[in-house]
Structures are given as structure tokens and as C-alpha cells.
Length: 402
Image (cartoon, rainbow, N blue to C red; front, side):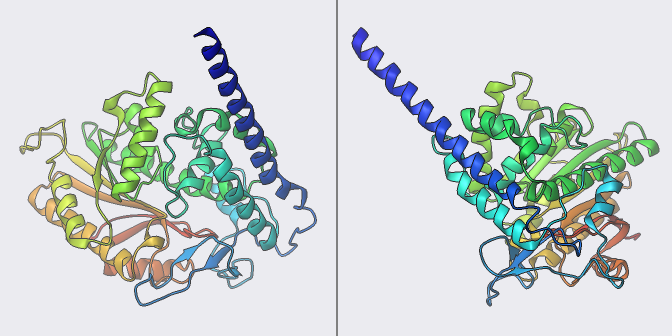
């Protein structure tokens, strides 16, 4: 029996050593892109790249993804007629360390390295989620900034707690050597959205300090914003709408995080709704019930006239780029019409929108075009801060006055 246990122990030890070796090689593979930064520095100051998605009759009109296809630069945001500010300016506004100024070739190389590393990083991960769009890479990108105490998006290790046991230690140990490219881009939009939610909450509670805050995230993926704000008491309830497979995978990751973080209680977890955001009818039904308070624990689904006012915050982060043609526009219209109806039924209800995504019918970052498009969908723009990259449109809006 003892020999059997010794053999099992040795086998487990060999597996751990093999996994550590694979992880080290994966991380070093990612870091190889650092060595080429000087070689491929672009003096034209073009820090962001995306690649085109081959359109079809069933694909989104202006959909993009990062892959190994042709690299495009998008708008020429570095010239005098640009409507998209340079990444360094946006970073300065948000208090984020700017991305490296380097060539499109280096951005593409860094992404390839990340893709090659992912299988190693999750080689022995029992909770491994499927690589839906860029979700798997985003977990690691958000963990890098979420574990950085100097970053405005520091999450006290929430994202880090969702990662595989051994590879997360090796990966983040090399964080300071990792080139500030894709994860810096994600950090910018995360900082904007966090800032937007905080400002909306401050404004709502300045009108009435008893205002209840409800956060509705469309396609939240593996983001931990809802948990972070619930645990800090910034919001009172949180809801996330996403694909069934994403929600199921996130629940596994959160269970793992709870085993590691004993203060991550169930009451800090958002309520999840499995739905395809392309299914407009289903989204409308779920959203109608949410804004009516059906799932709010603090009022048990019943809201009388003498209860506290409610602020509903609808949030989009890099999800519209994966929806079918015209669905992003339809979703924004559904959100405004549902919330406007609730405002009519309940004068103490207020709705805000915050987004970092790719809106339809706005090719660049022009404020006037953005204002016109959002107004046509029932939204009055409050803040507009476009940035280079995949989810280039960042802003805040409110329901147009009835």
C-alpha cells in the first residue's frame, strides 16, 4: 500500500514538474515578443490594430476579430483629421499606463504568442472554459491588471482567483516583463466602464442617498465587475445576460474562486440569465422583468410608491462585435424602450447606459455621428470617449426625456 502511495506521489510530482515546465515555456513564448519591440517600432505612433472578419449574409456588418488574417489599422487616428484620439491621451484621462507604441506587426506577433500559450496555461485545468471569441484570453488579460495595485481596475485578486492553480503563479510572476499591448487595451476600457458606473452611482445617490442601484451587464463574459461592486456595496443588485455555455463555465470558475477567497460570498455573485443576445424577444422579456424589480431581493419583486428610487445601469463591453447584423442597434433600442416604459410606470426609476463596444453606423469616433445614432435609439449622450482598437466606442448616455 505504501509503495502504491509513493508511486502515486512520484507520478503527481512528475506531472507538476511537467506542467511547470510547459507553463514556463508558454510564458517565455509570450515574452519573446518583447525582444522584437524595438526592431518593429513604428514612428507613426499607431498603437492599436485589429483584423477584418470575412462578412457574409449572416455575419455582423462591421464585425472584427483578432486572428491571423490580414491586419487593418482602422481609422487613421494619428492624423490631423482623425476622430479617434491617440491611446496615450485616453490612457491619461483614465489614469492608466498607456500601451506600447509599436508596429502592427508586433501587435500581431504578441497575439500569436498569447494564442500559443493558452493550451499550456490550461493544460491540466479541470475548469477550463471553451475559448469563445476572445473570452479565454481576456481572463488572463484582466487578471494582469486586476492584480496590479497601481491600476485603477485593481480587483483584489478576483480575476486571478479564477485562473488555473499553477500556471497563474508562473504567468503573473512575469507580468512586469510582458509587453503592454492587448491587456493594456482591455485595461483602458475596463477603467472607463468602472469609472462610468461609479459616476452614475454618485449622481444617483446625490439626488437621493437611498437610491437602489441595479447593474445589468449584457454579455459580461468572465468579467468580475459585478462582484467587485456588490462586495463594496456600490451597487445593490447585479444581473448578467450571456450565452448558456459562457454562464456555465463562469459558474465553475467562480466556484473555484470561492474556494480560494473565503470572503467571496454567494450574496456577492450576480444573477445570471442564459440567453443569446441575438434573440431580441427573449432579451426584451428578461430585461422587462429585471427593470420591473421582479428579481430584486431588496424589494421581493414588489415596489410600492413609498420605496426607495431605483437606478438601472445597462452596460455593454465588447459584445456587440460578435452579434448578427443590426442586432447591436436593435438591442440599444430594446433597452431604451423597456426602460422608458418603466420610467412611465414609476417616476422614481432612472436609467443610464455605459458602454465600451463597437456601435453600428459609426465608422470612426465622431461625436456628432455618435450623438445622432444614439438619439435615434432613445439615448441622450452624456460622455463620449472613443479609443483605438476593437471596442472603440466608449461613452455614457441616459434615456431621452419623454
